[in-house]
Length: 415
Image (cartoon, rainbow, N blue to C red; front, side, top):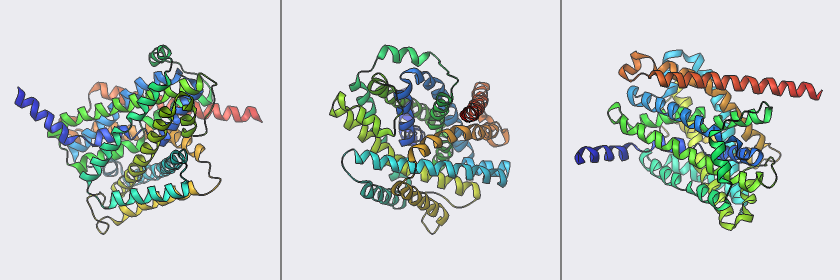
């Protein structure tokens, strides 16, 4: 029995990486801003969304990880093979636009987090781009994964800062299980944004590509599934503490919109320097971490979908489109942050909403693929997984339509 337990334990640590990293990095600058905004404006009210979000995240991440392990192919690769190049091209363009705004958001997060400590963005952003470029182009997948796993451990900053604020734990507990849905544009946009930033389309493409590049097969998949679930739970815990920290520090004093995530860090100052410093340091770590992952995910997705060579383990000569696209996203993101009068906050928020709107389409293709017995054999979805996945497609589509209808009605009323 001990030998069997030891074997599974060793296999778990050999496969840990893709699922855990993908889930945790989901709390990037855009995610932190979205959760901070939710707590600052609505207090503990949005906490109920974290339970269904976690369930949806586990189901979607597990499906992608399973497809990668069983087929040995990335998600965009499978979509191109099964649904054609035209469908794939449309998805790639949509994801490229959404991910570009996400890259901008994360480099803006690097800039604003270090400006809290007196470092100008004209120094921090070029240095961040250089560090990310060197890390990805000069390292193997195994080395990059170890650095990413270390970055994951630094998210504990948000848990500590949330505890230092001493929020209303009773209200937090009640609203964690009490659903509240307000039929107003801002609230619906926030809910869609929370789902969009927690279960972002890019995550599915990156996770499956990472599983394939790491070489995880169906044989090791039982341990990989545990890793995926653990990562999803950790992501939810971090999001919970960000919301309650902002609810305790901002909403309880005066509910309001915040300009960016650094507003939330500044609001923690009255609760002590440690709360402020940890929140700011957490924002820097999350932003730099995601500034590596998001352009990398986009390069994987587009190259796989359009049939180009991709992967960190390949050289620039072997995968020029992959590295070229990665570099373009970094430079375009940096330019947007350094240019004056770019509405970064609006870009961040709408990028999360765009993620939420695109998610049903990606989920639909994923669910169709994972149920193809020719591809998955005995690894097809269970009935529970199918109900959850198709339910998410319907709910997210409904929320998006409701948001558009309420927004149009609001614009017409202003005239």
